[in-house]
Length: 152
Ligand code: DQA
Image (cartoon, rainbow, N blue to C red; front, side):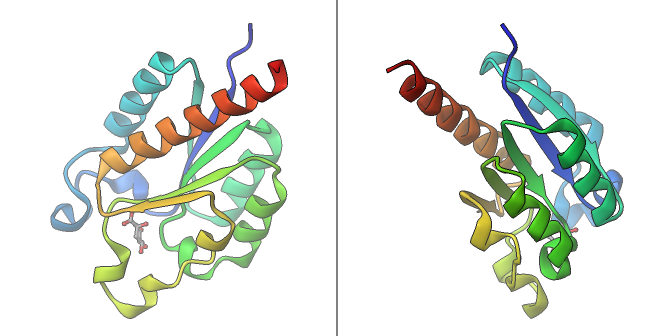
């Protein structure tokens, strides 16, 4: 049986997690975060694939190529200005959960606007790496509910 694919997308500068403003983003590296998600995904019966890109093109390409069952995304700064990424997420046909490590509402005003939130099924911010796990669990629950509907 093929496991449903959850694509975890990370935007620009998140490759520098661990050393990038640790007082804001914490000390967990992207490698550690991806390993955490792969482990939790396996426990939930999901195939988790992680892609990080410094630009919207890389994330949009990953969406088109992988055709995931669900998407967990931290669009980073693309959150606030990328219409192409938002359109690609809206068109991909998979439910989207948006994650931010920091509380974007308690920072500079420009971070409060997300172009992704209106098309996301859920948004989590300010919980650090735990937010990604919460989003993955929400995706697993949603996929299980859809599979059950299909059986019934
Ligand atoms: C971020 C918040 C964004 O405003 C910022 O540009 C990032 C990271 C977060 O995870 O808190 O790069 O998405």
